[in-house]
Length: 189
Image (cartoon, rainbow, N blue to C red; front, side, top):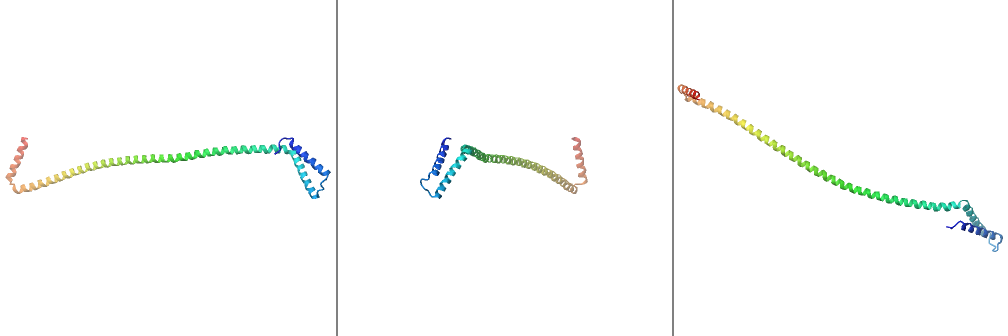
């Protein structure tokens, strides 16, 4: 790239001077096609000079400013990339923390489940013991009732059998003596 504002016009002026000299004095007697080619080059250089004077300064200021914009965008993209990497690292850390949190929650739930299971078993054993005691008491009461019924029935049968036996062996006089004896005991007591 050409430096300075005076260098470019000076080069263009020298090229224009060379074209003029070439046109006026044709010392080389060049072939017309070659001559035509040289004029095309000169015309192109003149065209570039006109473009430079019309908007060249803007082009020379546009490209460096565009370069600065690109540099700014690249540095901005680099900053965004670093920020995205940082965010990715944070997300990966939170995912790792989620795994640890999940494990902690599972362990806590398992320990609570074990505690609940132990509590339920203890309550069930307590209830079973109460049921056993009630069944034992109930069985004892039923056994006592059955025993009392059997005793009453047995006493009744014994009484009936004794009465039947006494009737066979006891005479009317013996019977009267027993009644008198019983009455005497009652009176004395």
